[in-house]
Image (tube, rainbow, N blue to C red; front, side, top):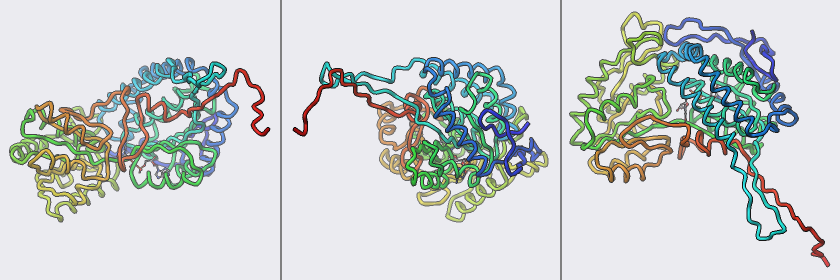
Length: 489
Ligand code: NAD
């Protein structure tokens, strides 16, 4: 069956292009899928436009839209095993992590289903006269282009698809060309749940050919993008001539501040998880460890001892604790950052070379790597390498810690570790990031907004603001006693 989904029909690419999807854990062929180009993108936009302008979905009552999202959540749970397996084959991530993702994805649909069904965003406004009925209603934005990355393929997609549909929009989804399979399955589940044809459209393919037309086309009303900073800038520029709404969820270079009074064992444990989960391919990864000077030596020694024990392996290896990088190119990039860091004076304390285990030779593995004695301005400190690379910097005072934490163009997430409640609150308040954890790392819930400050982007996903991104507020003023005003007499 072809893999592009346009106007309710599974279809092949107009130009007959296909792409091989390979598992990064061992380079085996997962499948060959259709590869869309500009003509397919245009057809998908036409279908979404038609469905928005004349189809039933935007006119479906909110309660019914909410119920559909709840049905999708049930279907995601029913098919969790197949979805998790598909996600792991495309990404190389551990099966257990994909299973967690699928639970989160079902929860996301459930949250937006309930939020949509509850309604309540429209409101009556006091216009200062009993003869005026003044209301603010919330309408869908229109045709949404949803562009997503490879690290959490279905999770990042769910954060967009659920609120977009909840608000009554139609969409064209373009997932990463490297990881299409769970998005293909999602289209089937949306159809099974009863979504009308044309409301959801899927094109697969490369960013410049399949993705770029979505930002440029005047028939698209909104682009919601999750991915890298450079691509985000391109999308914003491409969307400017048609002044479409843009939401950008970009990268991060997230600080993890550890004060000397932190619970030692817990802070070491979480520092490892913060950066090495999914081999560092997490937008909120705690890639910059900032440790109070007096704790530094003991903390880093212990961290390295434990990092060396992290076992690499494929998605179905139950003993593995982290998997491969997504591609050969990505591993080259990570390696180059490590080399640059060492050249700039960082001290390599563990990792830093491809594993020599023959069982891993066909995958794109790179070991947990710690670069100590890093300083501001090193490229490995400032740029998002998006790999299992932890840089360590020292600080002496609270002010210095905050200065280092905020010394980045990014502002996605960060954490602070201390047993002093006041200090934790003070530092959290001064960190310029969309999410701050105190004595924790990585948790999120669909009820709370997620997004970046500074060059980590703008707009919010999840939470009530995550739904509002996909809504337009419209003020309707009804004069109940209109009489001539004789303004010009
Ligand atoms: P990427 O920017 O290379 O690609 C993301 C998506 O954009 C892909 O679907 C790609 O095909 C598409 N794309 C590329 N060029 C395009 C163009 N010109 N027009 C339209 N679409 C285009 O990012 P990636 O490597 O897939 O993902 C990793 C990045 O994503 C990291 O920087 C990471 O921090 C970020 N990310 C951010 C969040 C967040 O919540 N802020 C979440 C996950 C990932």
